[in-house]
Length: 180
Image (cartoon, rainbow, N blue to C red; front, side, top):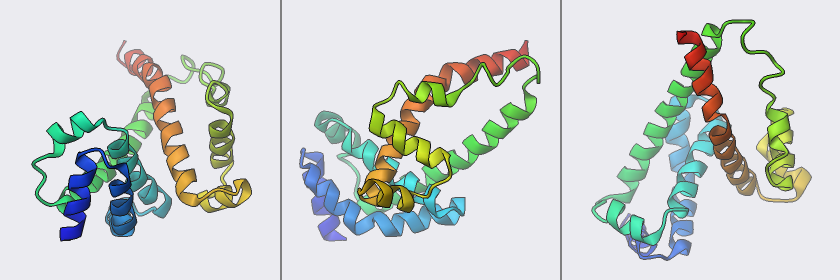
């Protein structure tokens, strides 16, 4: 664990490769933590991948101020994964609750077509996400595109984040429609 703290310190000071070492050491144990909550291995892997993508995309200045007082990186990441798993469960429940409350005739299939908006994303992301929507597993997508499964998870995670931003306003409209 002491070595992981050293990697964490290096990462905080801008060494992104140190985060790669943490990813290598902690990915599977963190996936187990997420799986314990969500009961779906692909979702668990996505949760952990998204956490590491978030860490990696954070600027060095923010890293230092936000995480400099983290005493145990293992405990911090475990807690973060648990929270992300809980957020996923809440979002799933909330998503189904919203859909159940939507008036049937006010929001039609033509109003929301995810596949049309996918074309605004980079081509490779669109292809990978389309395969995911078609029901292919991350492993199958990786083999078909001759890339690693971790790359697939990361690309799908980034695509989901972009799609979430695109549809944030749609959810707001749907909620407004249920209230008014």
